[in-house]
Image (cartoon, rainbow, N blue to C red):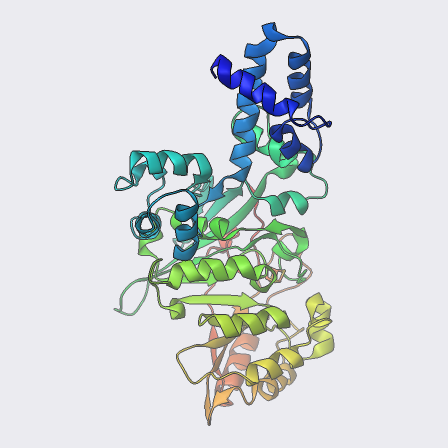
Amino acid sequence: MTSKEIENSKLKSENYPDAAASPLERGTAKRGGMSSQFSTVRQSRAEGKSQDLHYAETQNRLEEIINSQLKKDLLGMSLAELQQLCEAEGMPKFAAKQICDWLYAKRVDSIDAMTNLSLKARSRLNEIAYIGRHAPVQCQVSKDGTKKYLFEIENGELRIENCPGAAASPLERDTAKRGGMSLNSQLRKYVEAVYIPELNTGGGSPRATLCISCQVGCKMGCRFCVTGQQGFHGNLTASDILNQIFSIPESSTLTNIVYMGMGEPMDNLDSVLRSTEVLTASWGLGWSPHRITVSSVGIIPGLRRFLDESQCHLAISLHNPFADERLAIMPMQKTYPIADIIALLRRYDWSGQRRISFEYTMLRGLNDTSRHAAELVRLLKGISVGRTPVCRVNLIRFHSSPDAPYKTSTPQAITAFQNYLNAHGITCTLRASRGEDIMAACGLLAGQKR
Ligand code: SF4
């Protein structure tokens, strides 16, 4: 900083005579009060001109930290949002299309790699934005070829608000990211994504599905799910969600995405819809929405919005057709009863390509009897186009975790259940268990570093 700039920054401070004097300090005050770093700034100022250099360095450092908090992730931004950004920054409008192309078609992980943008534009973008890409911090490989990736969730305001015990402010987190202090371990949050290559596709094109997370933990508290027992620790941004897809080595080979990892998609619907828009828009990845399945326990307001605004497939976590028994394993049944969820689904047109399926975890003696099968058929009756049923039930073996109070159904019970549904006009399949040995199978995601 030149001496003139130092003088200017001091002048700026003098224009704000109240406690949080400079714009920098006011910014910090807004974010939760003065830190000791600001005390250093004040002290330096009081000690006169000999401290100017120290003051300027500290000021620079803090401005850098504050600015970094205001930086956006480009990943997850739509073409329209990038056009607004370019306009606000004095860049030509066509630069937005170029940025989209670099982000989503060429999948670069650095702004400097956007070589058809002017140097000035790249430099400005680096000042105001990150790409938003973070490599997974761990990968576990199952004997069946399934891979479980662990991602550390680093930035974003929601996570701070949603971590009541968190000691660090966003400012401190950003300082930590830059190496200034050790990150409070309470704030290290992880989510998992599971890569599932389909090895036996009967001679067709190979399929590779990625099961992704949309929240750190989950509020829904399903009793048979390890994620649900962890509680809720924050929402992911669209950038965090897309990063799971963009930052694994197999990214370009993926054929399907399922939102069935950690979290309830309808409880973080803005971010989920933003991410599916990037996947399906012509300026994004241009995928068919029918390559994407979003699951839900059935949060009705979110479901309604999802069904109106998206064409992606839907999977409902059903698990028991009887209200009282479902409530015993899924607390959200109290607020959003399964009968109301099914009534909503019946009102939608399923005649197109869009598919609805129901997930059903087989719990020994609890939901796998002929009584349950008959009630399930009765419940799902009417979700059809004319006389053709359009729904499918996916049976899932319960994957046991330490302390789990449940057992999976016997093979005989699973077969009998499946046969009954198929015989009564409901397509019923048993989902292959994948990645159980690395705790990657359904209901086992814990988001923990091993
Ligand atoms: S099954 Fe899904 S909705 Fe239920 S607690 Fe687990 S992650 Fe949440």
